[in-house]
Image (tube, rainbow, N blue to C red; front, side, top):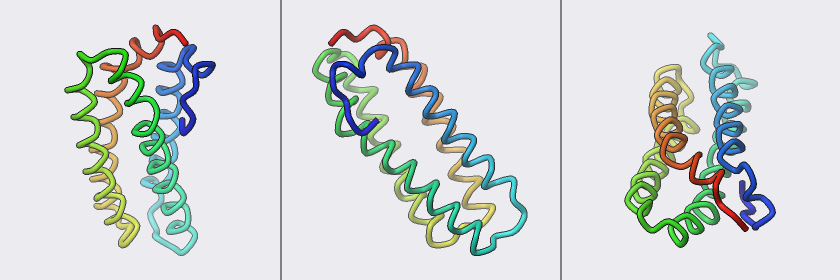
Length: 130
């Protein structure tokens, strides 16, 4: 979702949900592991990077387009941006110390964010025209 060009607008809401499902699955894989070995830490860092890239792409593309085309969504976008800042802080904590408690906290905030974003933006995204 780092590129947000007109041809990518078709069914973008569905794509957003698919990306979220993929990130949820990655996090579930991390939280299901009982040990925090070097390999798990590497997986954790890869997940954190993927989530950060996803949010950076939203900030640079999707949010900008939605704010321009649907000004009524600006308060929702502002809330999602605040979520991104909170999640970024949690990611830094997880990267520094990937404990089960840190991952559980990240998972809870991430799920709340994804659910809110999907409910508020997916249908609008699917209706965007290039």
